Structure formats: C-alpha cells, structure tokens
Length: 397
Image (spheres, rainbow, N blue to C red):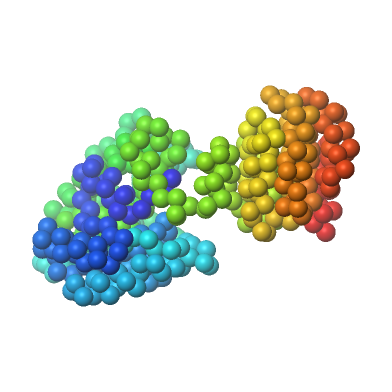
C-alpha cells in the first residue's frame, strides 16, 4: 500500500527521523492557515507547496513550488489543487491533486553548504536481506544516476536477524563524504530510518533528497513509502492512511468484493483460480500472441455470483478483446463453475460482446464441457493448454 509524503514523514518522525515539517491542506484557505501556523511553529517565512499524489517526479510536472509570502501560498496552492499532475511515474492522464503539503523552507543560509543525498531501504530478494541503497547524487532520478554514474551508488546489506550494526551506519556516513557533526547526524539518521522501515513492515522507504542543512543537520525532505499489505493486520492505524482516490478504481472495486485483481496493459482478460495457474495463464496468452489485460484470481469458490462479478470487472477495461477463463477444479467442481459461467453470461446479456474461451480441468471436467458446448452461448470450450492458446490466437487474429 502506497501512502502520501506527509504520512510517510509522520511514520519517520515517530521513529526519531528528523523530517522537513509541514501541514496538510485540501483548500486554498487551509493552505494559507497552514502557512501561518507553520510560521508560528518554526519561524519559516518561505514555504514549499507540494502536491500529494502517489508518484515521484512531482517537481518536473509543476507539483512543487516555492512561495515567499502568504499571497503566493494562496496563488500557488490554487494552481496545484485540482490540477492533473503528469510526472514520469504517472500515466499520460496524470493524477488529480486533492491535497497539498505546506512545508517549511529548509534551505536557509548558514556556515556551510547544503548537500543532497539519495537513500532508500528495501528488500534484496536475491540475498534474502534488507538493503540500504544510497548515493551522493540526491535530488535526481536514481535511474539516471544508475545509468550514467553507477559508481556513485552504494549499498549496504543488512541481516534482518541482526539488524543494522553501528559500523555499517558509520560506513554509510563515510561514503557520503561527511565529517564532524554531519557524520554523527547521518549515523543517527540511518539507524532511525532502518528502524522505521522494519517496525512499520514496509517494503520501501525512499528519501530523495536526504538533506544536510547549512548547520549540519540531516533530515528527510521527501518520503516515498510503500507498506506491505500482508502486514497491515499488525498496523490497524495504517489502514486509515489508504487513499483510494490514488488507486486504480477497478482494483479498489475488486478488493471490496474479495477478488485478487491487478490491472495490466493487455488485450486478453484472465479469470483464473489460484495465483500459480494465473501466472501460467498469462504466459499462455503471451505465447498465443496476446497480452494479458489483468491478473484475476477468483479463488476456490468460483460460483455464479463470483464469476458474474469477475466478468463485470474485466469488462470495465475497454482494451479487453477476449476473455480466457482457466479453472482447475480441485476444491470447486468444474460443472459448478461451468454453470456459473452460463448463468453469469445470461445475466449480463448484451454486456458481453467479446469472445470467451473456457478451459476447465479437474473434477467433473467432462460434464462442464458439455454444459458449455450445449449452452447455445458464444462461449468456446477447451481441454488442453495448447487448445486454449490456439483459440485465443484465433479470436485475436
């Protein structure tokens, strides 16, 4: 589950990570009030207006602006709120900005120069360990840094059973070229950041940039955070951070009815029971010359109501040109699934205007095939994987 910058900073702050302070606002009036409150709390006279969407590269799309007085806070907030923000990490349509974060100016003058770093904590699946990835090139797209100057990217592997050791935090600060107060601050920052990642059951904490201020403080100016959905039962308060406006509406609807659905950019809809079979079905579609339009696991209770709901969700995608239903009847009998397909098809009526291929294997598969073949509906049955692939290929030709 992705969360907004201000929510990520709240988690960081709870674990002792110094963050750029800010106040969230949903209207221009709230934005101006937030700026005044921030001025009284921090003394800042300049304010950073940040669009709150689940995407990086907001500055490039015009979603991050600097206001030097309250009038500019009102003007810039008015421009950003409600805009369709397009960034390198959004679709061409962009995302609607519903909230802005009014943040303090942390690039104030001082005795030393400011510096920006990149830092993230994530899981290294190849080693089964957590990893801290960091670079002196903060404020830039890390993909660009990796491509053009890979020697400027460092990583620290952390054994999850042991945790981040003090010498590792010091090595990170050393590789970032820090010394004195800034060195000590960075070791504390890294340690607290890693604890925030572990204790919140996150899959990603990305801070870009991590700022060394002119008075040698280390703080998170941004926060891109992704929480592990499977661990949310341990963090009931995190559920309140979910913003469904930022999520795919079809995926939200599917989740509400208990279907495992992931939207993809293809032309063949998939309806499968079991994640492994779903992945194999997607490979089958690729081999047949198509592209999977979704991952949809209906689970072990593929009755008529569930199949009909799955149909409705798949058909919401206008790019779907065919639907492949691939069910293995272990827990559920194939004939019940077949009857569910027939009933759902009849209930939907004219809503189904694309070819449907049904492959049922397992308990009562022969009876299921007869039900499909004798239904009189425009539904093609298949027995073998290759037969299903051939029929997908034929309808796409």
